[in-house]
Image 1 (spheres, rainbow, N blue to C red):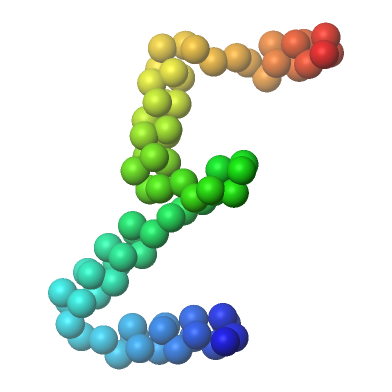
Image 2: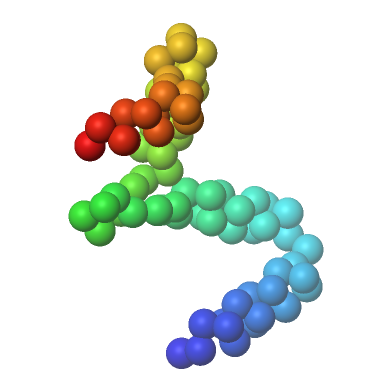
Length: 78
């Protein structure tokens, strides 16, 4: 199976599609797919990714971050 050909076929079919409910289902399916992987190769779920992003935003808001200059200073001591 040629992935590029399959993608082009799907694009053509979606362009012809008039059923809004089916389009929404396809959109939901694409949005629920796994967006990434952990360093060990296991998949990261969409909900886990969103949870990690929310946690990171809270850390930024509460000042639990390091400036790039501070990090560079710490790296020199490694």
